Length: 130
Image (cartoon, one colour):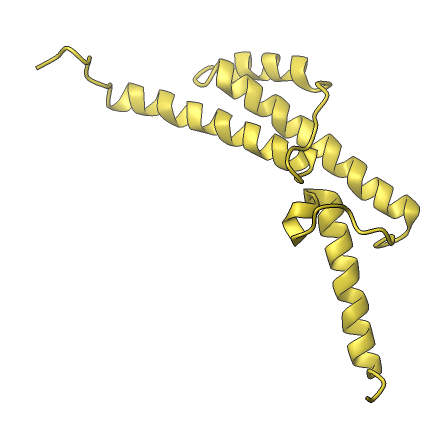
């Protein structure tokens, strides 16, 4: 069998790097793995920075989501609540990173805002109404 060309070797290395960075930022489940790749994607320090960036961003998104859930129609109150949740410990779940957990929490908060806006625009009818 022929030796892979430089282009093939480069593309393979790029693929491994992309997979490694994505797994560290979003979690191994994002690339169809159970665990993080053993080999560094960019280097030990850079991989650590990517993972830490995901945690920090995830915590910020989590905090925003918590604020929106508690005060969906009061932005200033939501921001105050969010500030109290910025340092919450955040764990990744089921092969996903803390960033994905933060995104889920933000999504829940945005859902509460949408519910609140709809209740103002088109209030729900009480269950015992004709």
